[in-house]
Image (cartoon, rainbow, N blue to C red; front, side, top):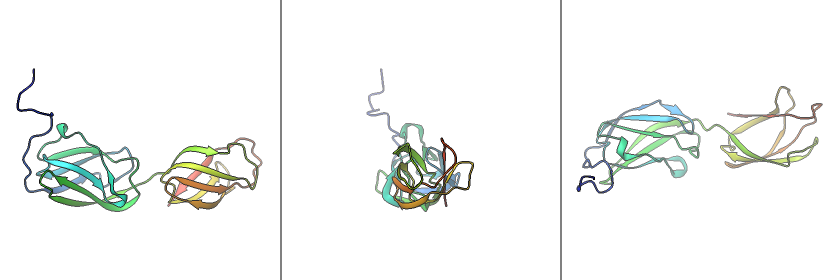
Length: 170
């Protein structure tokens, strides 16, 4: 049986003065765990990474008045930005943070290419890619276009028959 007062398992703290004294670590990439310390954190309703308004999921059952733990979303945009904490009373606090948005490739099309072939890489955090090399060489692909989820390249000539690509961001 469960307590009758416990409707949903949520932290039942009343919203108080919202204060963040520490976010650890001060930078990270998608999937990294963040620990935020302060006061009035038990009534947090939402955590949002400001750039592109990316929400971070968290389990309020594991949080208390002085700490909240959550992961950086894989879809968080890179660079300096604020993490916005909002409590049940609608009070917000912004905390500076730097997201390291590592490029992740999930698909390449076409997969068999020759020199001069245009290739589309699909994934996430591709807007900040500065260089694509054939791994283990200095043969560099030309970047035709890039967005957060897509990178279009023109492949260079190579003497290798099967290669991996080395993708670098700023």
